[in-house]
Length: 247
Image (cartoon, rainbow, N blue to C red; front, side, top):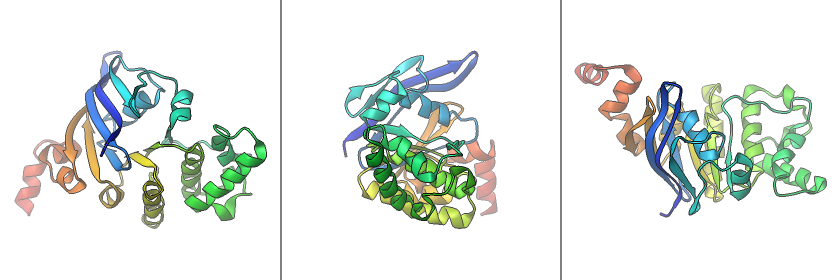
């Protein structure tokens, strides 16, 4: 499967903190790939580097065969790479339809056409019955769906999802999993940061694991969740041996 995104030796520091260190990874076209790791591992920083919200100190980002290292986010979005944000901030006074139309306007200058596109996207993410509701009145789950819809309206080839399931209860997570899976079925490549392991195990074909800014593991969900380095990154030194002793 051809690569849609590849990072080579990507690094970024903030003062003395090396947030991302020499990261190289790839995301195949048409795949659903996950990036996991403990809090503070550098996952969101890595998304910011690949999408243009931050410029790396060193290394390169290639998307669709082009070097886009440090290229502005709006240019990356126009080229087909769009991201969501962990902290959802909709235009609260505007309707759900108008919020989604903001994304549609990237490729559709006409207002009527952007609003029509918004309606179609709302159907895909389960917001069709809330199109005329003010975005500020949505539940947490509704706002997460709106964030996804606004990004989807930009017609991405690659969608970077930053904890789109965070803050949802188990039922809401279960309802969102098929929505995310359907995106790949529709031809969108998905690269997702996620802490909800139920979703990672159900969705991801491959998983990259980041800890303290460095990649420590890569493989299928089953492979990485049984990896000693991954267990210790989450649970501390010696945790893998303790778990074995209890088994």
